Image (cartoon, rainbow, N blue to C red; front, side, top):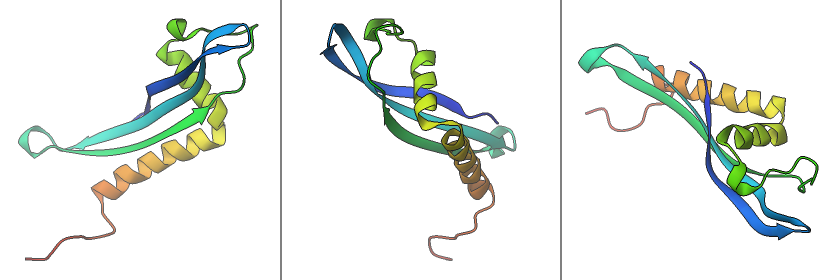
Length: 112
């Protein structure tokens, strides 16, 4: 199991000072899954998280315009804003969702 980080959307503004197409917000998802069993009896247990982070003011010395940004750039920026502890907490939470799916501690529905 390894958490996959992705970017859902980027918010950008047309101009900030002398810079154009400046990304201001990264909307991200993080997810993982584990398949238990095989064939027709396989069950996929999943966990996920979603969020958005605002980026610091653009710096002309390290600026990347919207059209040149890669998914890897955006994921790295989002993780940097979140910080190592929060990234770890998100990934731990996703693992806990998968564990709960595999061995539920809460029952819902009706017994008949």
